[in-house]
Amino acid sequence: ANVPPRLRMQIIGSHGGVPKEDFELWCFAVSAVNGCGSCLVSHEQELRKANMSTEQIHEGLRVASVVKAACATLSAEMALAGA
Image (cartoon, rainbow, N blue to C red; front, side, top):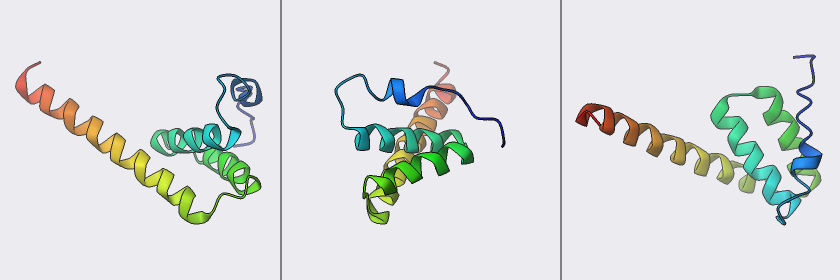
């Protein structure tokens, strides 16, 4: 918990032409799917600095959970079908 990830998120987020708020929301969603509490806290702080509301942040989590569930379902169906 005390070791910083050193992922250079500021460099990654400055490329690609997307607004920082969108990038942080995507990172927040990925952190939730991956179960990384430290990353969740960090990205939530950035979203709050960008004046994103609690409802907007929760909506991002809901979308991420639906996408993850859909992927898990499709993977299970493919495994059952022998693909």
